[in-house]
Length: 110
Image 1 (cartoon, rainbow, N blue to C red):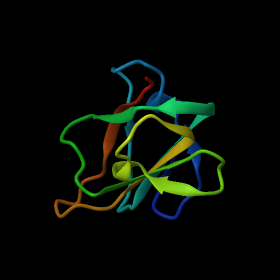
Image 2 (cartoon, rainbow, N blue to C red; image 1 turned 60 degrees about the vertical axis):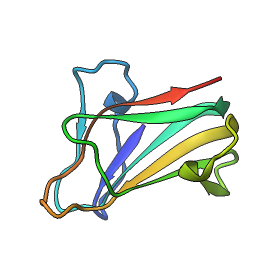
Image 3 (cartoon, helix red, strand yellow; image 1 turned 90 degrees about the horizontal axis):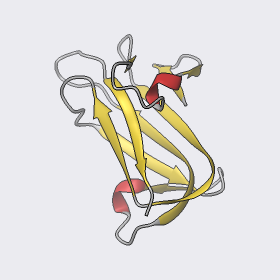
Image 4 (cartoon, one colour; image 1 turned 180 degrees about the horizontal axis):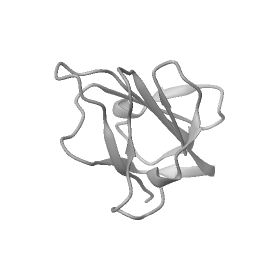
């Protein structure tokens, strides 16, 4: 897993998928923020959940890809499971000036 603050570089963010709810990734700066997770191969994706540290984030775009070339809107899936290789989340700023905190990204397979 990787994360990015604003227009900065992508950094490793293993705490996003380590299975430990005591760890978290915390966004920094003014944003926007983004996280990406490579599922390690094409996986039938039935659902995905972001476990937040604090309040859930409201302005999130969620994308998935089967081939790392063409991306689809994860929120538009109406007939899961779908084949997916990687997921990408884009977090836009909120009116309170806070940054997102994420404890875990959980993928649900069928």
